[in-house]
Length: 123
Image 1 (cartoon, rainbow, N blue to C red):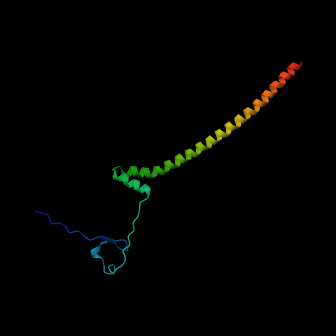
Image 2 (image 1 turned 30 degrees about the vertical axis):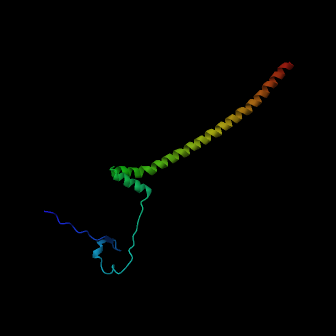
Image 3 (image 1 turned 180 degrees about the vertical axis):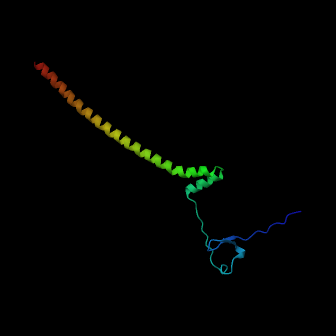
């Protein structure tokens, strides 16, 4: 009644043409001591985040929305920040010009008032 254990298979190897085969079934041309080339690829950070998200059970549609709207959101926020910086610069320049004008007019106004007082006394 005990099931017979399945013997473990040899490692799977990818051939030069892209197909996969078990290592114990390699043709003799591949078994002549050629070095095995192993490519290890590291996922980009956003792909890693997607894989973690998919691993937690959220749907692929949510991940696709994140991939699409993530960079879009960064672009929108950057654009808003630049616009606000330009508006702030305009406000500062306007306030500086207004304050400078008021100070200049105030000095001239005091001098004009004093001239009027002197003119009235002379009459």
